[in-house]
Length: 432
Image (tube, rainbow, N blue to C red; front, side, top):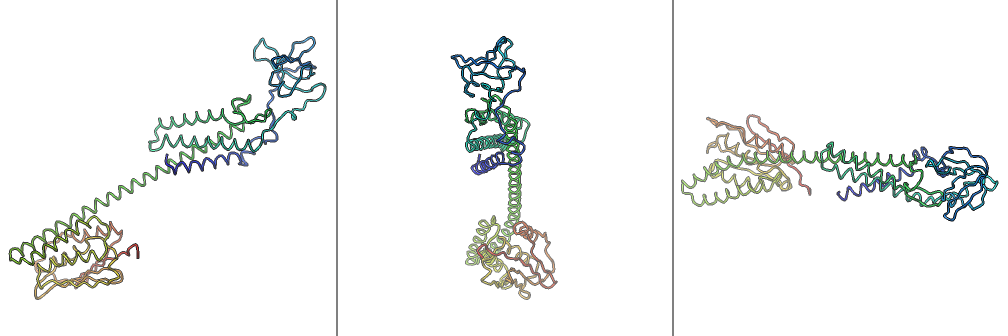
């Protein structure tokens, strides 16, 4: 059992023990302490007349009556009531347990001609001592029941076998502790186990034990259900996160091949035309681009400064392909460079601008990347090609899906027929 669960169970057990011992409802239903009296069985035979007590050396005695059978007086009664040999008693009696035995003294009415007062022989135990023992007992009962239920059913299906095992063990605990329950002995003034008393099935004790058992088991059951519900919720969240991660990895995987093949085409052109210096510089930029993809492709959010450095790298590669025909204008405010956005957001936008617009010396393409009021704008003029390339829509749809998965929001697309603008809302960093 976890330490936190043990602490909570201890606190709950203390609360149940206090409720059982100090609840006005339970005390009202039970018998007030000042009205408790030692139990005396009801007489089974009226036996009028006075008898003379004869005490044997062994400590037990008999009441001797003239012309009638003697009455057995238990040794315990002689000791409790401090009876002496020769005392004259008027009593009632009950039948013996064995058929051949003597009648047994039950209640004393008079002693040596005076009314017998039971009160002077009753030794009430200390109320503080009794309360302490009661608190310890019900605390122990409650804690054992809760730990038993939670240990058996924790991380298990609530199957019939497990439930039956829990019920049987809890029943056994209740029975054993019921027998060991501290009960006051009104003659000796001590607290003794319940099984040593003649009257074990005290209604107050049964009611308190039943209340403690029901509340403890119900609490443990409800707590297990809540823990199981929380566990299921956590597993669902984990599965959802794993699903989102898998979908994100799939979307990132759609970027790399497309960008890779375009880059190889540009590099082959430089090699074919023997532009060695440009080819080496191009390889360096290409190496940085793919290193960025590998390092940040799994990240959810990256600073704008990192994304801009990556954009500058692959914009260089495009500028090699479209020499003096493609221009990039970065207008970024310094205060937004630490703001966050999903990795690899600019590459598909720049790629789409290059793919779907005419780029010639007479009609060069200017791509503007700027920040406006916490939004990153990527804008290019619309100059349709005479023979437009077929569009699969993967790039833009891929970016939209990634933004939805990572940020939970959509970005804005503005197409007025003259310019095409994508507005990407930036997120403030945690330290902002």
